[in-house]
Image (tube, rainbow, N blue to C red; front, side, top):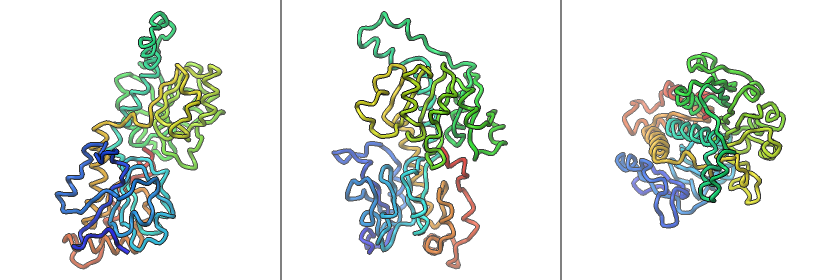
Length: 377
């Protein structure tokens, strides 16, 4: 069944409803949907707001642009005509079953080019806020505790050693933002080519070394089975008592209970978290009452720059597929050989005048794809 396809057969895109507020306004502002209008592509918001995309949401659509909903095996169960593309607005894809997408010939893209600078800026913002005790100093003023300011002397960033867990697109951008502070950067990323790190002036090391040597450790990798609780009690015990830990990636990469214990015992100077193991955090979570912890509701990077960047990247993926071209930033690259995908992209390419013989040029499949390291934010 192709319930979502218009009668004129135009390429059709569904947009997840979590972009909208209660009044039906796009809370992200300009996400570049006008470019789809200009290309004559039919698009609409999905009829229902859902935490998981199901067959009724996607069947008959050519592409889905989505932010929050998860994609599971159930998404495709019984779908007569699943979309060619699921374009995620963001860089994380831990809630997307890539194997299921690949099995059904569905491309999954992310938007590292749109999120890179906003997230890198958010990481630097959080780092400075933690080092300079911004949150508690704000409370001192608001609560009439001016006399306590001597207790909260900050820590300068200049000349420190910053450790990065992950050296993908966003972390590399952060390295550039850190240069004026004359810091030394050490990073753990088994997927980053040594020559790339060398060009950035970053020393690669194992995770234990990063934790033990750094004055500030920033989590910037994606959440996978490999990185779940990468920062656990043992690794936290390696950190300097004067060091701080920040997480701008995904909550479960850090063992939150172990972090709370380390902070309680004074084994860490402080922490900054834009993400949590459970979101939103429980009101009784001890982190909420700690003066040396700066918190943000998984939205520190949400700016107009993020809106237009992520939106533009996702829309470009849609436009590429509509023209029969494999898009950039495909995370399930094994799908590129799927017969269904090849056939449908070939048909679209012929319709757009890209090819003359109805056969998809195999050379297109090798271009513009993310590397393992680049896909890791």
